Image (cartoon, rainbow, N blue to C red; front, top):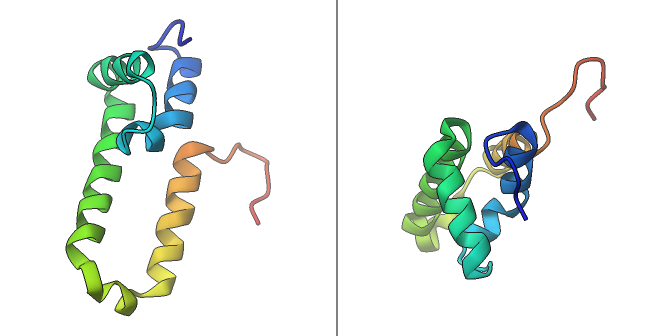
Length: 94
């Protein structure tokens, strides 16, 4: 499913399933492939680590989540979207 896992296309494939992987929602075979890629690819490993840190921070907030700055949440969403689909030069952003 993920040939040439250290290639750019391998990173793109992992990025597409990363959230499901972190949530434990993918099959064991794909999970093992993603785990291996995260061990070998610094960029994707850092991305996964960032998502885990954000997820942990959100879980620690618990009931205080209602007081979270909505603008900050929106900035985080845009940041995550850019990680998944980096802007290309010359392409306008909305």
